[in-house]
Length: 142
Image (cartoon, rainbow, N blue to C red; front, side, top):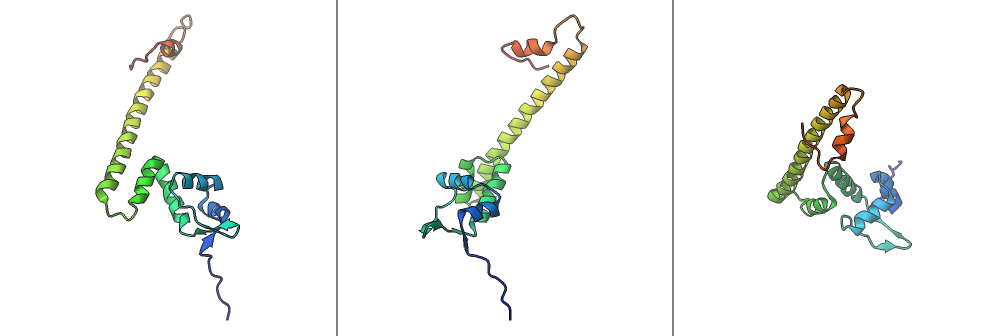
């Protein structure tokens, strides 16, 4: 009777990096920041629990949503999910920052759209107003 090969319980940093689709340097950086533990060396190598793959993926997904590494550290501390108030506080603060950025981006879009239109409709003998506006100390909203 053939036995199915068992999955390893641990892996080297290189295998972990490959499994998590990050570089070895990223894992070391996360360790320096306290996001990942540094396992004891066994012989010449450190052996990482397979569960570290899920932790790295958690960090990467949180970064994709705009969380800072400090916020991610706090979320990891709360990873059992029971302190909903703290988790919501962190997520709400991130959401507020995203909404502010969107407001700022919409303002910039409106201003640039106005400047491009003004440049397009300025007679050929006059300079494009985009340069003059950018040279001014502040950019006035249309």
